[in-house]
Image (cartoon, rainbow, N blue to C red; front, side, top):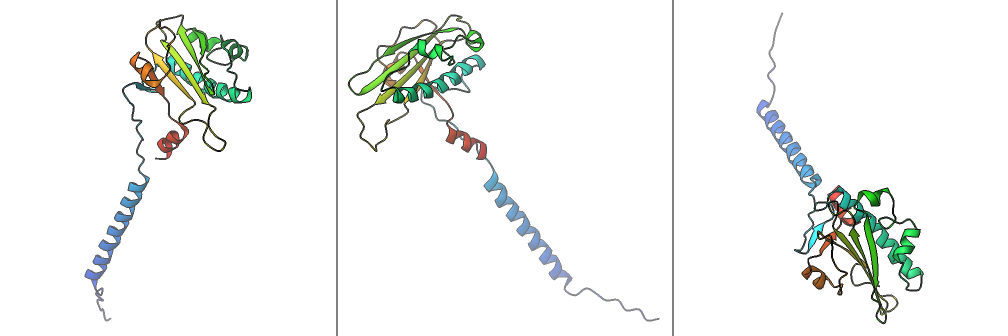
Length: 206
């Protein structure tokens, strides 16, 4: 019986190939992780602004979300009704939160709403002030809407958002005489900033 030992050829070369393959796999995995890592976008707020999700409790958030939804409907109704603003009574008759006296309204401080219309020439503006009946639940909310009908056809209707929502921790405030950002900020009102659809997409997908 004849026995012959066959030695592997180029064992050092096979080890080198293994090391290179492992390095390539690690490098590809690292690149994939870097590209798929999600960074949460952070809202940059000015001193006169607060976050609708971080700076408000659950009851105030409920009012804010309802007011944000109502603002879009009020804005659309203004376009469809030849520049007429919906009154507080109109909103209550439509059972539109947070104006409707429903269970959510009662739990959120029973805000009493009043309206001021400040139309001037082709610039239409209105504001809705909500003052709480239960002071230890909520402060005051102010919804300000603006339409500039001086714009030409084909140009954007608004230079910025058609409405803004403001909040004050004070429970007994007068209706502001001026509705500009500067005047409201000086008076201590805080603009409530939500996440927009684009912000949410960035936050979810990274």
